[in-house]
Structure formats: C-alpha cells, structure tokens
Amino acid sequence: MSTVSNPGYHVAHIEKGELGELSKIQEELNEALDAQNQNAKIMVLVELSDMVGALEAYLSKHHPGTTLDDLKTMASITQRAFASGRRS
Image (cartoon, rainbow, N blue to C red; front, side, top):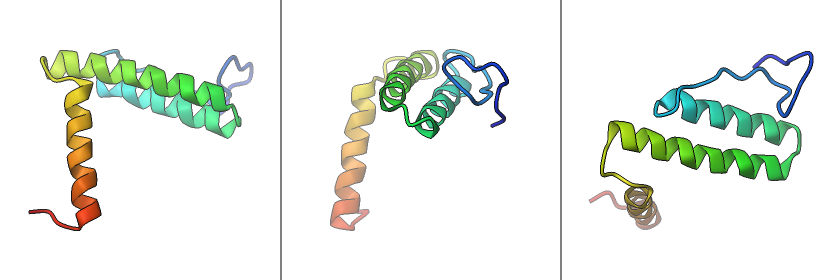
C-alpha cells in the first residue's frame, strides 16, 4: 500500500471495494492493517466492526440464509479439530 499525501483517517492508499463482494472485506482488512500501523487501537476495532458488516453483506448476496452464526459454528468445529489434532 502506498501512502497518501493528505491523509484523513488512513495514511495508506486503500482501494475501495464493492459492498457485497470480497473486495469490500479486503478493503476493511487493509484499513485495519493501516490503523494497526498507526498504533490506533480503537480504529482497528472500528475497522473490524466494519469488516463484520462487509461479511454480512457478502453472505446476504452470495449465500442467502447463511449467517455469521453459521460461520461461528464452523469456526468452533475447526478449533475443536485443531485442539484434538484429529480431522476425522
């Protein structure tokens, strides 16, 4: 990411994504990384919150009926598999 000459919240140039697409999730991740590079802890949390919204929009558009709770369920199962060291 390159830097901008007249920064607002972000000092890095961040490509804009399209809501409902992976590009918006990437935009929010890049903004969180820029906030981290600025040592702006609260801004990192704001960007993570924005990422949740971007994830919800993506799910709504590309996987109707799938929710963040469904993703959390799968994350828990993955965590369980890694903790036990078993895949089957």
